[in-house]
Length: 388
Image (tube, rainbow, N blue to C red; front, side, top):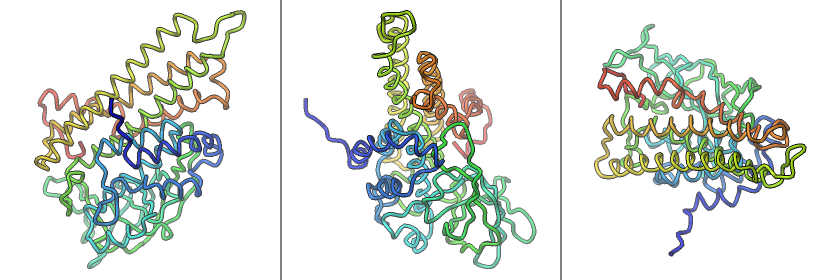
């Protein structure tokens, strides 16, 4: 059989895995991605997978992006999450005015981050917006040179509306040094992501340095930018969950080779019930993974062929993403349960994997409410699919 070498970002992620795993406890202690580790990941190109090639980025395929994030998260879910956020926020470059995009992405080691949720207010002032706001969940912000935040546009004292009647919400991109980072990140899971609050007040933003992933169209023609924007974010979340799930299974198997319950001469892995449950979980993980990649590849084929992704295909992709995240959480919980008392200790990967998996289930793009959204679409009911 001919061996296929991994693509460059996956190869880089695999090379970094030992250090990422070894520093997981450190990241939880400091509650962020250490600056030196962020630099190594930037030098490896992990944050430039979505950045357009015209601006010096790698413009990877969705399959490559997911494989890379998965490999990072297999070693360390918080690091995988930071890669996912840094990479996917670079999608803004495909929508921005070229001179502004070059300003943000000219440095090959630029890391961007931010929050899509429109928690800010942007007042129209000639060719600029005057931005104020505070955003939660600013993952990886401490290592970013540029940040973005969603904001409702206010014009002539009124909230500006889109033709659909929905509020006009835009992403505002600004230098990280002009924002205040507020340490609010005291949480159960994904502790190493540094996802504290971001705040700005009366910050002037050129209109050309703002984008709408709902109302605008990409300026660039690459197939990656025809891919659904919220589908790409969902892929990042599910890729992190997928890698974390594999890490949990690996941790259980390693524990099962040595752990013996009190009064038993058998290791955990020698018990028939544990063997059966482990095989069942491996099958569930592999099935969810294969399902996700199948939907990714089908959607990518459409993006490359026509650049117009129908809503049914976008919904199919989101369904696979949500399934991976929810299945991953169930598997990590089962791994934690099988680990017994040993899984309680901070030295155990199983407790961290369990916490991280259940933190991911809370993200809006793969939260339980997405089942209802996608179920409505399956029945052909009228549905706002603008964020699918």
